[in-house]
Structure formats: structure tokens, C-alpha cells
Length: 407
Picture 1 (spheres, rainbow, N blue to C red):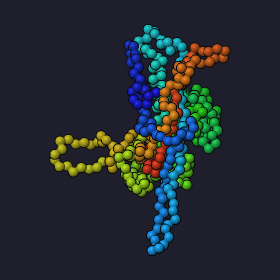
Picture 2: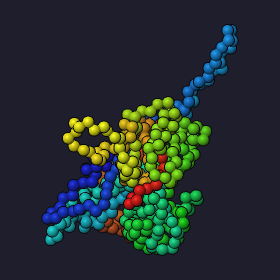
Picture 3: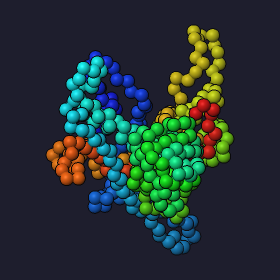
Picture 4: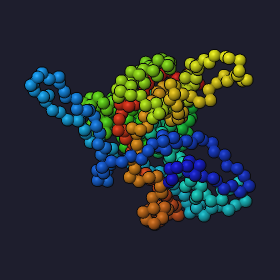
């Protein structure tokens, strides 16, 4: 899959005599935004990133004829980014691939190509969801465990990341034990529930829902990269954030209150500026969910003195920004969090870019039955990559924000 233009990934479906209307949203922002990173290869497992953690500040004021200060050196460590494997699968019958030519007024001219194109967009979308996570693969959190085909989920995400037809598991995060599995029948059965084809036996309260077999195997997302040990493990890229505080991002805890510009000023001034001694507004971007864009909009905007020359009145935002730093809305961001990202510190480290697996010479592989091959064919979209950060302390985040009504 080419990662450049999503219009290519989404595909232009050829319809004869009718129109196909997409009933779901697709977008992928974070992956495209990142530059490709370079490092020293660790075999085929990942890359090492030489990281400068501290300068050499050993000095003293000397008396006449006195001793020189004891020498020191710069602190440099080798951070490690390990590749993760993402795969999506398409299965079609031989008849479907042959493109059904019926008397239907709205059949799809090339069903195989349509499935390949649309599956690329769907898997790309899932990758964007994981890009905002912390690497555990969580798509939802169980609020009340049950032996049932109807499961209830909670926290601010509810069921928004779940998808129909997805094979899932319920996992206890502390132990990694799989407590139940199933295939989603209706991912949006209600505002806080989803249904499966058969009962999930038995989920536990606070279990997380992951794609089957994916627990702790997802890419390292923004929530783990821009962290101070609040959300993710103490060790990041092989370095302890307790031992090396320079590997921590700056956190502003809103403590369940609404967005206030003082939180944003603190993230920039008390956080990034003091941490690194500079505030590079040209490299910074503010990433947030539309819920927090609405909260920011509700705060108002800078007043401008009326001088009688204006011929029109603008009562709304056309571009959102704070102190000259642009804002980027992404529906896959946490609803209660705002990130201040210095993209000069981020990179995507790629062993294999998104694309169809054709190691056998074809992207289609015939499905094996009990005694013979089936008239069914599968194709696999694969990518081997991960995200990394060279200077986590040049980033900051606000979390624990209240969410405006309606979001």
C-alpha cells in the first residue's frame, strides 16, 4: 500500500447503474505526518538511536595556581526502537473474484479490486487508532464483566474503536490472561455496548478488548511516547524514565476540570520551555480531539479593536491556534487529552512499508480445506514498523480534561 494519498487507498469504486455510498468514516493523519527515521540496525528486529541525554558541565573557578576541575563527559545512550508487525486479511470466494455479472442495477464492476482498495483504507485507519495508544492494543475497556453476547464498555472511548466483524479477545492487563474471545456482530449496539456472534465466556470488569492475539504487540503510540510514566511503562525505548528524567514529557493534570488557557500556557512555559531551554513554535503542533477543539472554541478568541474600516464581522474561527502554534484535529485522539508535539523529535522506523504480501509471486493464496483446497482466496496486507522519539522532553500533554456535552 502506498502511504501518500488516501484517495488512492480509499479507491474509486466502479459502479454500473448505481451509486455506492460509504457509511463509515476513514482518516489517517499521524502516520503520514511523521518523517522516516534512521538508526543503527539491530539485526532485523529494530534500530538503535544514539541519544544525547546530558552535557558535560564539570567546571570550577580556580585560584591562582589551583587545580583544574575533574573532567567529565557527555552522557549518551543507545535508545532502541523495535519493529511491530501489523497485518490485515481479505478472503473472497472464487465466484466473488470472478466478478458477478448479474441483472443487478448496482453491482460493483471489480469486486476483488474494490475489496483490496477498501481493505487498505480500513487497516490504515486501524493503524491510526493504535498510533494514539500506548502499545497494549486496547480498543475498549469492559465496565462490567459478563458471560454474554452483549458486553458493556466504559471510559471516554466506550465502543468508538470497535469494528463489525473483528475477532477480539478480552484480556486482563495486569496478567495478560485472555478471559474470553468472540467476533463482533454489532460494534455500536448502543452508546456503551457491543454484541458478538456468540457469548463471550466470561469477561471481567476492567478487562481490555483487543484484536485477537494482539495484546502488548501493537505499535508504540503517542500515549506511550509523550508520557511521564503516568500511562505507560517506566522504561521507554530501553531507557528508564526514572533514571533519565530527560526522557519524560511534561504533564499537566487537569484533574477532571474543563480546558483553560492556563493549562496550555503551563505545558509550554513551565514544561517544554524550561525542560529544554527553548520553545520552537515552528516545529510544535497541538493535537486534540474535536471535543477539546469545541472546548477551546468556547473560551473565545483574541479581541481586536474596531476602527471602523472593517466591512464585515467574523464571529468564528477559521483556523485554530494558540500562541502561533497550529492545532490539528484527529478523531482518534483521546477525548480528554491535548498533546503538544515537536515533530522534529518524532520518526517512523520502517522495515517494510504497507503493502500486499506477494512473497509467493501473487497476493492471492488459496485457502486449504480439510482434504483439498477450497474455492476461497486470501490476501494479506502487511507492514513492519514502529514509532520513536529522540527528545521526549520537547513534548508535553494535558490530560484529565472534562469532555463537553455531546462528545
